[in-house]
Amino acid sequence: MAGKVNYKLDIVYWHKLSNPADSVPIRFYYNSGENPATMKTKIIPMMTYFSQKFGEHAFEKNGFATLNSSFTWGGMENQTLTHLCPNCWSENIISHEFGHQWFGDMITCGTWADIWLNEGFATYLEAIWFEYTGGYTSYKSDIVADATSYLNSNPGWPMYNPSWALVTPNINELFNTQITYYKGACVLHMLRYTLGDSLFFNVIKSYATDSLGGFKYGNSVTDDFTAKISAAAGQDLSWFVNQWVKEANHPVYQNYYSIIPNGGSNWSVSFIARQTQTNSAFHKMPVVVKLSFTSGSDSTIKIMNDANYQTFVFNFSRQPTGLTFDPNNDIVLKQATTTLQSPATKTLTLTAFIEGFYDASANIMTPDSATVLLRNVTTPYSVIDSAKAVLNSSGTGTFAFQKIFNNAPYFIQIKHRNSIDVWSRSPGQSFTSSLLTYNFTDTLSKAYGSNMIKVDNSPVKYAIYGGDVDRDGNTDASDISVIDNDALNTLSGYVVSDLTGDDFVDANDISIVDNNSLNSVSVITP
Image (cartoon, rainbow, N blue to C red; front, side):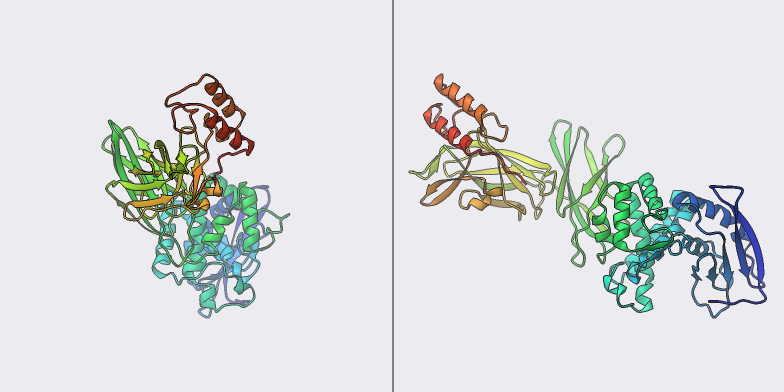
């Protein structure tokens, strides 16, 4: 509460967007010697702009009153009459406090744990007003200033702490500038980047104008806010809120990339996104990379980085010269380095037996070639690199890769000309010092889904299933038909229907495909 005598009073009127004939008085109470003239002219377009962005101003009146020196805050966003410190007619203070009329007064945080929904939003509306008056560059400068202050003075706790709903923390923690204000504003900026301008503002306006959901003229808690914006966006955004609002700190990127010549004018750039922070969880985010070339314009690519140590490969028909991570600093709350590495061969020593090719009596296998694909360990499990080599009589082959990074997890997928593809087990295999050894034969669980067949009891050995001659991922009637027909015609040589590697299609091959078809053997993938 505040009382005031010997004050000066000016009134301006804002005409509603929904009914220009209806006006809203905005009162300016100020001390002798103060001059609110500038803000009297700016409050009208400010109210219009905020109304356009977040729904029409919700109250029958509004105003501001400067107090005396006993009021030590910059401002206090009382509903329809904001208190200000003496002569505090700063545009920045006004845009913040006036922004609270939407976020803080029209919608109020449900508990102290949700205070960021008041202060983070009001701080973000400071930047939104800068965007109105000075364009996107002015907006971004304000956001970057907030981010810089946070990064330089981050106290290391999350914006949302559920215990605050029960026990009010001390005022310096609750209203910490770096966390509650600056990080809150930056998180909203990154939500805007994630969704894109149009969807972001539609989502926030939907939240602010939702009276049926209990937000407008009501309270909001973080989980309800998350559910609302997810529904409005048509996508689950809990991952975003969980990592930026409920987790402390921020991502620390130590990225690498390599430029790989593929022959002729063809080139690849292999890029790995690595987060190394130990005081916070992995932060999933859409990421922009910019590639430069010896000729022509730069190329900008947006990717979803949804796993740590995730590898991406970009192919070009001109020579790349460099890669820049997050060139526009859209992920403002981060530390990041991106380093060029010379391409170096990564060597996989792989052991796998092929059913039918393996002779249990001699413990050896008829050699044959296989192709290995290395894939990311998160959907859509993109192929990063591939190599072909011969699996020798011990089932061992050496496969060389150029687009792979050390210490990053990959699924190993084996493809053979007439066998069921097999994938390595979760959570992925990593090269160390450019080397990786993986043996599918000694343990059934080495295959994803334990999708192999026992081919030897002493010692126990497992092999990849044979019989998928049409390479559709299943052993079924179509495979049986091919092998039956080739056996009937006594086909010989290096043919796909030869499941035993003896260069003949005969009863042995029919037996394998019949048995695997009867058991509905098929590829098992993550």
